[in-house]
Image 1 (tube, helix red, strand yellow):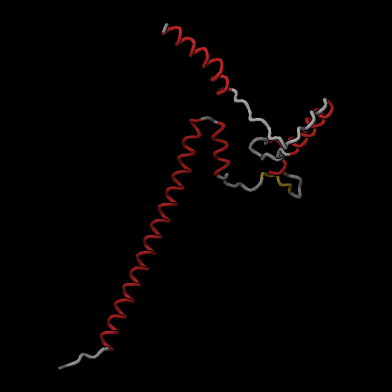
Image 2 (cartoon, rainbow, N blue to C red):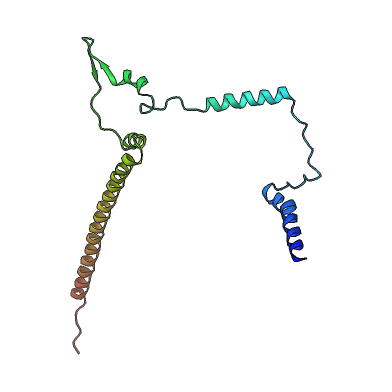
Length: 163
């Protein structure tokens, strides 16, 4: 008897409750809402084409020299008057470019690049914190000197009464 009851409850749970949990039914529309008519196949195709055009237009076409190096070799070459091409001035790659190149190499090359980035950030933060502390201490020292000067002036201004 108990096995039958348990099996029935499991069956009801799967049949009713689990279906409602996995695929919940929506609430009915309020009575004041008018239902729209369904789109025809021509209208659906038009909407799909329009959405595809807008989506394609939203893409950024200039993705940079890292992913399309062949398109940017012309920009890196500077033409001299005697028709010799020399590479553009040697510039140091930015941090983002370093990370992009390291990411292509996998985790083994990405980890040291990320460590360099975080170490430079940490050293910059540490230096900024040290300079802040030094400036704060100088400010506190100036305030204390002003207080001592004002106390000494007050003591000099007030004559002592003798009784």
